[in-house]
Length: 193
Image 1 (spheres, helix red, strand yellow):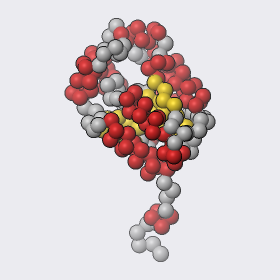
Image 2: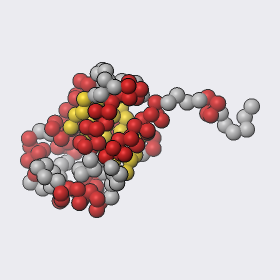
Image 3: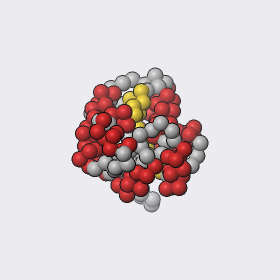
Image 4: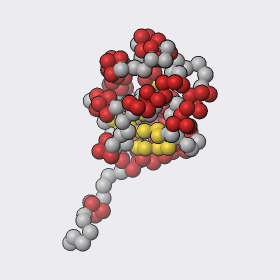
């Protein structure tokens, strides 16, 4: 991955901001919180306990894509960021494959780091969270909308059960594996000459 954007994705309460900020800092790049790009009508709708529809989300996702394109050519300020070729990190739920397909049209490579958690852990986190517009009762709607990234999307999948630093380390390891060139000797089928 060269000059790419890492999208830290998952439902609300999975830790996208916490993990995204730490990953961005480790790579020496800017972190963008897609929640800040929601239009006021979306924020009001969610705060009132009403789930967003696809029609609500498309303008927001286009704003996230514009942010990604604005940051696609940034230069990382740490050795890790240079090694991984990370230009920026953004936290975005990216719940459905069609949403991720749109984000993949960015002007640079895009990788998804999926923060996977069980309903109970997510609900506990949302219950404890203060000062955020997303209410706990919308978790069920997000989980119903969630289409976990498929293997052909080449996601880095990480459980949210570990400490934040360990989650970041696992994402880095996944990005590092993807950035490593394939050894042609390993790619050869077993038993071939």
